[in-house]
Length: 389
Ligand SMILES: *Cc1c(COP(=O)(O)O)cnc(C)c1O
Image 1 (cartoon, rainbow, N blue to C red):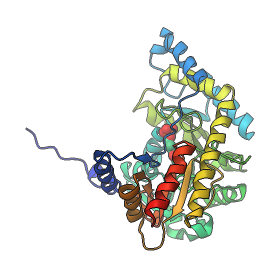
Image 2 (image 1 turned 120 degrees about the vertical axis):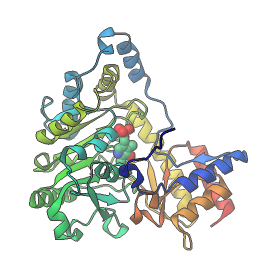
Image 3 (image 1 turned 120 degrees about the horizontal axis):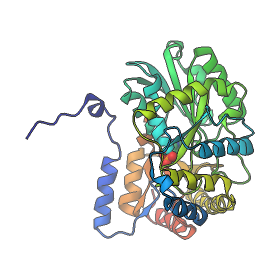
Image 4 (image 1 turned 90 degrees about the vertical axis):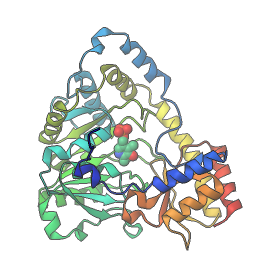
């Protein structure tokens, strides 16, 4: 047997904060408890049938069984450009300003390899989607965390980034509508981001995974709608949450051509693009009837209202999200994020995510996902009422 020694990059990964929760989940499951899982950001509803049919048909065509283009089929990239025009009134050149991804996580994880040298800095938010931080560290870089605080509406305070860090940062990751806080950003914030990026020569990577998951008539904007945004950065998009396609692995990035091309160059050396039949299904999703999205958003709105009204009725502090399928809840007096998570799980059989799992500034919160139906949501409230806190 040889001795197996992991790389420093794996050894230096931040501690996996969900380990203890995973253990407790297993313990509760073994007891036969009927667990309600609001922990994972994965839609519970199936992919709409017209998208599945498009895949079925495309999978039968041998032309789709070959290696696809690294940067995506022309038809997919053109569809993305048309969708951006329709949805955001943003003009994109499909040949140079769009790249197809094997899920947006893939592109987010790989892009630091295109720009980060050893010990270079990137900015990301805390709490935040963990891939920004880990992607940068895998590329040898360092992260400066911008805290998302309630008093700033969970937007990063760019003026609080030390001059010295801003001066040497090469990239910045932002994400609105936001996971995990469900906060949204308006054009004024994006304008500040563009000025900040221009001043410090920073590439902006905006993760826009949730622009289509919004409620009460609210329509999230694209970062690229902002004047100058396409000069300073790119936007990541995903079909995963919008069309219940998390397992399919299809997403895209759009924006500044040199940045898109550099990402494509990294990808051409690592993967061989997304299965064409999946890209064709993606075209069906983006070009097809959007009633499926409206129906899902209506369902999420109803679940959200049951959950929020119930939580407020119990005396918890929470705001009604306008977008995303997450609810960001302040833990009650006397609990840490981990303690409140354990309380809900061990006493109530309810799985939530402790806020500190998304970064230190998430301490004091838990995240619930709207991934169970209304009746189960009512049951969540009843269980919390019964166990108290
Ligand atoms: C779910 C999620 C993604 C990943 O989406 P995929 O396209 O499935 O890789 C990216 N960013 C955020 C913030 C997410 O919540």
